Image (cartoon, rainbow, N blue to C red):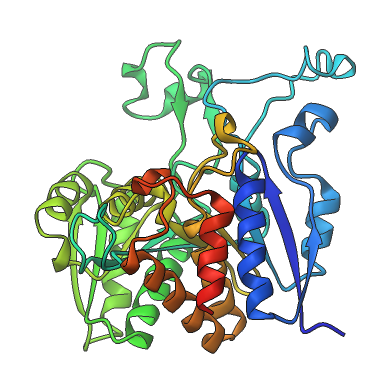
Length: 363
């Protein structure tokens, strides 16, 4: 029997390309695993009306974790009525399956390491090494929205100022959700020898929801007296990160703010081609690059696979395969430092698979 069963979820567009590249590296490591194909993404929504089929959720329950490629996101309210005639009138719209997966499986930690590997000419500064903990199930991403203000809302103080045709979204922060993401950040800092945790918020304006978050943050911080705790407003944090990125080690924040601040941190260490992420719960995790599906590059093997390869490194760590994870990160760092193999975003002409083959050759 194999040691691990891993749900293999290429998703859409270049997700297939970067996952193929990552498999080259995992095969070279000889990880004792079965990679079980799992259906997810735009194609399944178009054909079946469900981008995250129940069979995929059932399969995930039978695997140890998942590795995920990329997903199509649609900013507009997309309907299937012209794609699937039998769904006429059912009002079905596309919603990101990764967001739904996080909520259904309670993958409440979004862990995003942002590390500047020496030799990467895209680095803002080589020594940047920031880890972002983003709450992954609450905040502005709960999916409770209204196209116009419901009549019953006008009984709430302040709502009477809103026009009837105002669209509104609910921001939900619970004490439990806030406390567990902050504790995860402090536990990480403790385990990895980091001396500082910074909570990012907007409590001066979002007085109720961010008050809940900051109350939990201060409560948890008191349990870790050896770790310095500070906080910053999200707008000021954007400025301070650009000015003094080496001042920050672990950042913890709410869902929307974490989505924004982690992309800023990623850009400072080379961009989304280097940005990996883990969606982690109590007993299951999904690892992914943070870039999109880039359909215009689908099948061209042009994009940088390092983000997905580093996501597999995170997966190895989570599985307890620390030695393999260390070797893999070392190989990635060596290729970046040498600068001889570079994909287009790095100013080179090497393909997705050539980058993976070069990393594998270092193992």
